[in-house]
Length: 400
Image (tube, rainbow, N blue to C red; front, top):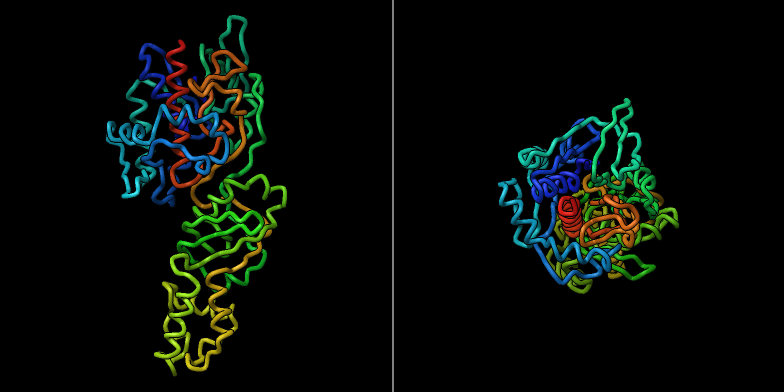
């Protein structure tokens, strides 16, 4: 029996049946359908991993790398790509090696069909109440409506977002670190910036002044807050520290990471010579929209109607500072619009990372986010999820 029909649960079920077709494999899901998060109507292109192999860098896996390296070595990014291709799953690869799907809903349906074709039975809408070990070593699971099933081996892949899977694991003797969101959307302490700029989405460099850590990537600012891969990248490293601080933190944003402060100043000085009587707000610069450009002028206390020739040096320098080192304060957090990832879970040292088996309970296996292991956004985390599913599903089948 496999509990949880997300990515890890489905892939684990596939490999369990594939490694030993004689086994009866049943997949249980609480939601009305498998991969419910991928079937959302508004979910756009979605990352599914990265085509890269060793060496696995510590910065790519903020939690658990000493333990999970064995899993990653056995199921590398190329293995994942080849598996998608072998089943004609609608997965594309970018020039940088990122695996993604244009239509997550279609992918979810295709993956479910691939798993069903192996002979795996899927039960959706199944609300599991409890698990108990029987005297003969088998497991009995009870649903909330009183149904009971018995199995020889059990794999839990319920993720980290809900506590129910953790409660089941504790019944089986597991120890866990408390789960908390790892990829975040940060709430602005003041709405002034969002009111001025509107929705702005672009590549930025984000720096945490307290630690000096900086990342470059896409980010989106709106009235909802600041989110995107760059923010998720930082929060995956500091989620516990930020929670302790009540998410009252400061970050510095470089809105134009491709240019140095001196090159931006040179371009502004050049405009002062060539634009002369034109208002500074007439033409937006640096890939910003007109509203965004006017918003940054407002932050620098420059009237958009001011002619270029009347701008003072200190005004231009203030504008450069707002564009290259803009300090933002935050007062809370939310979950990002797309990828939702959780830190914490079953302690990594309680898992055999060669097979996905529990070290504290015989014939129990874990896969996916229920384990205390975490990768960065942009592929690393998904590589880990697929690798753990391959190992746990295969390990359960081969041990039988």
